[in-house]
Amino acid sequence: MTEINIDLPDGATPIEPDDLADLIPAHIRTRGDLNTFEAQNIRFGVRGMQKRGRRSSNILSTRFCLDLHKAMTDRTWHWAGEIRTREVSIGDCPPHMIRERLINVLDDASYWVQNETFDPDEICAWLHRNLVWLHPFKNVNGRHSRIMADLLAKSIGLKPFTWGGGRIMDQGTDRDSYLSALRLADTGDFSSLIDFMRS
Image 1 (cartoon, one colour):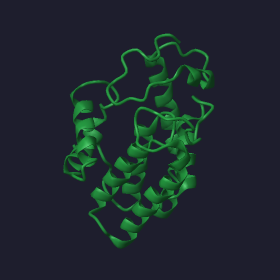
Image 2 (cartoon, rainbow, N blue to C red; image 1 turned 120 degrees about the vertical axis):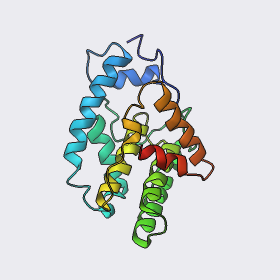
Image 3 (cartoon, one colour; image 1 turned 90 degrees about the horizontal axis):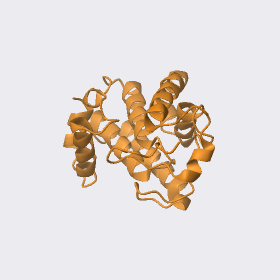
């Protein structure tokens, strides 16, 4: 497993050595192996959660949020669906505050949907950005938050997001554009993030 942290793309959460003890598949040797296995786990897990995610009120609950992460990673990591208990280099929330802030993030989004506070695309962008900022899990936060936004969009009748054509896992122009849009959203300007989500 010595290669697993080599060439991490910008904005990716490093995998700590202690985390590797919680890796379920024994055949993983490189970051590429891990990405391939996680992608299969995520596809399978999301399919299983889609029926539960037909209504925004179901999606915007702590239970659904944790269960989605668990379904996405339960064949890969023993800590699937568990809130992180250590500080990470990405995110701005200490572990002991995550659960409370996660409730706030989901409650805010639920209120915005019910009261049509913002344009629906903007609500989904806010949800995505706020989950990324919170970084509730040890890993797979970006993919989890994008799927949460996708499921919310579908539940409120929006067309699916395209996320720049889906090429944001590896370093390159698409990932750079995505991270720039996220950083701009941190300042309150969501226009670039919404454009990217729809590009």
